[in-house]
Image 1 (cartoon, rainbow, N blue to C red):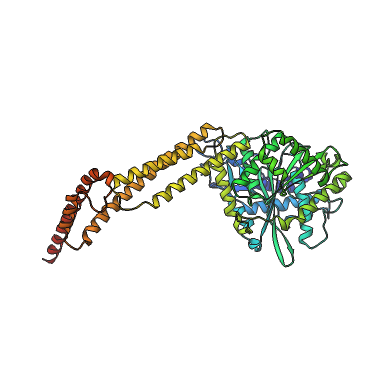
Image 2 (image 1 turned 120 degrees about the horizontal axis):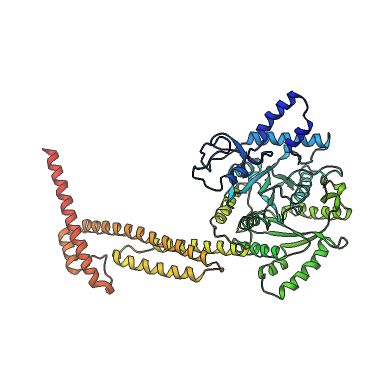
Length: 580
């Protein structure tokens, strides 16, 4: 996409134009990166920056607090508001600049009127994921399609391997289908637009982006909302490893159809991520991860490409994996009917050079195979809509809560994992911890109310020891530091729950003892006195602790009598004083 500032610098000449240019630059330029604003946000003092820029700038705490880079005022770190008016202004300017560059009628088939890229999830300088809630609700809830079943197409892979390029052509095809026209990838001379892309080595998007409007496809009176997700940084080996793994996991969990974009062949990196993908799918239910498409680009044999050649290649990979035991889930996944593969040849120098991504710039064999693959993707939309754990169809309205759940799960993990499987173990251990907590809550809710507090404390303590051992025996993965942290979290939780429960139980126990005495109906002192003489109050009848509880029961009975005496005396005194 043409840089706005560069365009105006090359086209302005008059003094008035220069004045207008500088005024415009102030509105659309980020003072941190000195480039066009990307996903502009305003902070508390009113100044505007790229979301990623200000987040990175504030990623390291300073003694003075979080200061605005322009006015140096202190601002709350998380008081960041999207500036939609400015975002729309920049989008319109970019569209106008592109039309000037390409000439009249040469604009993108997917124009800003039909949507534009928005950042759904972003990472800050410390590697934390942040969910853009305003985008989330605007895209999924504020439309007439919020009740339609959804198809979520996501793509992950190494940077600068054509992910955005691929998604833009898929969007062209979807738009033609949405309009009820014949399948089309656009005109031969039409420059490619949509998600940012360019040839070279630098990535253009960070985090998870999506197209702001779904494509609505209809068939036989039914409709489906098609959402497009573009993830950058998912397999960026040179970047922050933990952020890459989290972004990959998020894309995998959210997509109903995931395209795994691979260069040349399946390598150890891709196998690692696939192993995690399939483990996560099993952990969160088979319907969470539904359909995997392995797209191998830059295939060395331009003659033997497509689905049929891919089957032969995958069969060879299966044979290799069967000789080892490092990737059991990948081996199972490659045999699954929900996993397919496609071989795509090199696109040609016209695309990888400084071209504009036009169909006429592609090698003929690449264009033919690209069209075949995209036809398969678009035709499969109806069979790959998003399902819940039970197999029920999800609508757009379900997605905000689902995505928030995924982000929360991933952000609880801050242990510096360095491999995809290590992250899976971290998440799995966290889930086991939550199950242990729920088991404790259920145990406490089903405790009887007739035991003395001392007996109850002993029973609860024994249960907690049992749960602690159960948890330590279930640890997964080699990260002992992570295990230690989780065990400490569990022990703290158990101790807090023990004190809270026993305190409440003692209070209820005392109230029940008083209520029992008041409702006996044959004289309070006689009943309590008899109970004290027996060394028990109905409430304490356990043979194994008869001696100890006898003393406690006498104490309870004596305290109850004293309490009632004092209370009744005070009540009678107030009554007579009030009557005088």
